[in-house]
Structure formats: C-alpha cells, structure tokens
Amino acid sequence: MGIAGSLSPDQLEFFNSNGYLVIDSFSSFEEIQEMRDRMDELLKGFDPSKSSVFSTKNQREVTDEYFYESAENVSFFFEEKAFGDDGSLKQPKELSINKVGHALHEIEPIFKKFTNSENVTSMFLSLGYKRPVVIQSMYIFKQPGIGGEVVPHQDNSFIYTEPTSCTGLWLALEDATITNGCLWAIPGSHKKGLVRRFIRDENGVHFDRPSPSYDQKEFVPLEVKSGSLVVIHGDLVHQSFENLSPDSRHALSLHVVDTDGFVWAKDNWIRRKTDPEPLYVS
Image (cartoon, rainbow, N blue to C red; front, side, top):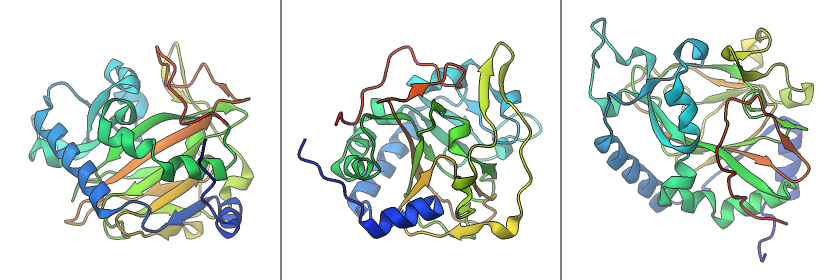
C-alpha cells in the first residue's frame, strides 16, 4: 500500500492514556480555505425550506426522515435558536446553520480528498485499523451568538460496532477557544467504557438509558488553532458549550469504524442503502 503509520510512540501513548490527541498543523491553510470556500458555495445554493433542526438535547423530538436520509446525502440543519416566534429566520441562512452532514466525504470532492488523504489513512494505520470506513462527516459552524451547546457524550453511543471501534476526527477550520465554544473532554474517561447507546427502533430514536451526571471540574478545554486535528476515542466523554461570542468556530468532523472483525449494529440510527468504501484494506 505504501503508507506507513504516522503517529509517534509518544503520541500513541498520550492517546491511549487520555483518550484524545491534538495534532497541530494537521492541515494547511490552503486545504482549510478550500473546504471553507466550498461550504460557502453550498450554503448559497441550498433551499432553507428543505432542511431540519439539530439538537443534542432534544434530538428525539426533532428527528425526521430528512435526518435519517442525511446518512447518504449532503443535508442542512439549523440551530435551535435560528428562528423567531413567527417561525422565520432571525438572520441570514448562512449564519443560522448548525451543521451540514452526513456524507460530505463521499459526495463532495474537496471533502473526499481530505478524507482519503495520506495524512488521514496513515493515522488509522497507526491506530491499528485493518479496514477503516468513514461512517459520517459533518461541517459544524458553531455560529456567533447562537451556536448551540453539545452536551457531554461518547461517540460510540451513536456509532456502535461489536466490539466498539469508533474514532472521531475533529479538524479545526477556525481557531477554537474557550470563548467561541471549543471542545472540552474528561481525560482518561474512555477507560470507563460506554455508558449508554443512542438507538433507532419502531419508536424512532432514543437513548437506552439516562445520561450520567458529570463533574464539570473534570473537563479540560481543548483550545486549538485552525488546521489542528483532535483525535477522539469513541468512549471519551466530551462536550462543547454555547458560542455566545461574536466569532464563529467552524470545524469538520469525521467518524470512523473498523469493519474487519467488527459488526455494525442494526439498531444504529444510520441505516445505509449501500455499504461505504473503506479508506484502505490492510
């Protein structure tokens, strides 16, 4: 294959110990700008009447067929606070979107190029993946003033395999700070295992048990510069707060599972009509 693992022993040790890893300058300015420019084009071209609302607090109530079908489409989701009492947007659509997902990495060439880059594939070789598949991608905006809170969660809750294998990649497309809603994580929390699952059944989507309560003092902020990558273990407890600042916090998120010896759970919310192609087969 000609690709070698790119993570150093020290990086792997930090990741295995803490459940996350920050890689500075993972993507170049040019790569970041290319993705941002393409998203600007997509936003200008989309019809606001054909979209949905995203919430990590009330996802069961706002889930609809548009959400389900987004697994294989490029779909647009508004912030909960984007609408006024009369149901109309309070500001331009470009400043009202929460995220775009969940198949940018398959449909949009610029995002596909990043996803299949040697930078990404070599990292998963380092992590021991044999047949990695990107299950979903999201462009997240964290809009100024209305960017919503993402409550404490584990990625394996939403993207579950037997045994668990999800790893999240979070690429900063702008500087992420405490002020504009950076990620926060509990170091080492991945060692305690998965606490609950988000499942889809005849009643729609819901968690199989309540969320535990977390001590906010245990979270540490992951402030990063644009172009930095945060690698997230599927069992790491992480969150982000509302963005009440005047500055946005754009990011690209990918979630990857192994498909060599790992079984995709049939009650995951994502149900694809076609199987995604692996990044590589080792």
